[in-house]
Length: 348
Image (cartoon, rainbow, N blue to C red; front, side, top):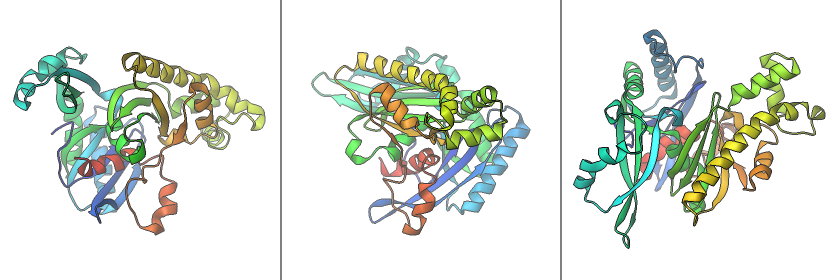
């Protein structure tokens, strides 16, 4: 099992904290085309649990989802959250593949904050500077216990785990258009429990970090400050969000400190990246994740960062039946990872 998958016939499986999603593509007229997709809700404690019973329940849900979606292969590439992995870009003298393979653990030991024998390590050459005779290497590491856990869950579902891939790599394929491929783009994935910030160029994450701001935090602060239950808080979030013109700005004022924490971490990430890469300027922020659907959030983030912000569209780089267009439009915030995982075959 690899962390950077090789070419195989497989479907993408996004193991989220509140839902599991899958997508399968095939080539049609030289373009990736949607074969099937689907999702199933999951209790947000199950995937984090080390209980064999809970993991067995996850396996059952995956099997049910795969059966319902009628996938045509048992091979799977599954997602790995940024918070569960370590990524780094390192620069080395130009080496042969064999020489690099021998030295990579030594190189990784300098930047991975865990003992190398405790992680599943993978790497890929992502750039070369012929003038300086240097290479850029993307390192990805996941704790052995996480990799083993996901392997067991997928196998118990009757499927074969070909690889684990971190969300930002998958999302960069589905969310970044061909016109933006060479630009520095930030992908912000606002999930239920946390938000992942990834600065990406040429579909390669240059910086990845996770911050503890997500849908649960938004819901909790609205519940507490406005004295309403969680169900009503979720309705307020979807209807009013960061729009300060709605209900006298009550929801906006309540959410602002939490969103400002996300802005602070976003600006820190941008500053850190640009101090090390002065020739590269971040040109766009793309939002994804279910919690992104807060009215007024893109505009607020754009004003706070001075960078163009847009809602991600994971369907832009694939084809699909025209009759599905209205259905897929409503799923755009949820399928970036699953579609991106499935697109790996088309980005060799």
